[in-house]
Length: 159
Image 1 (tube, rainbow, N blue to C red):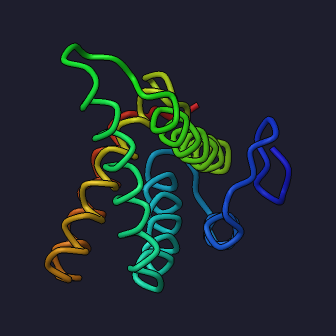
Image 2: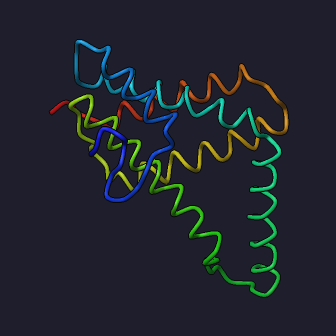
Image 3: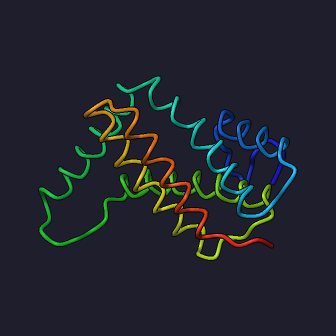
């Protein structure tokens, strides 16, 4: 992984990468404890990106629901939508790069496939953002994001 946060062609958002790299530079320990710090730094850097552009996120949800509504209006059995599935895959890939960066900088290893953990993170965060867009409760979001970091830390071991 490069110092700029690139993993196999995936570029992390600079704000998140800088937060993780900055936190890593200040650590004098490694392992799961360090992983928690790095995950928290990344999540903490991500949240202002959401709160700064709520209308953008509402439009993204609307576009997804519109796409799925058109797809499900034509089908009664389960089938993926290539456009919506590609959008989620892109999010999964970016989150996977974030998880790999945090693991590399903390000298830890994920004990579950990174792709599965990333899908979990995307699902939880997308739901949390939707809730925040509905109720604007920042305190609830702090609890949700802190719980996410705690849960993620249980999915890693020290090298």
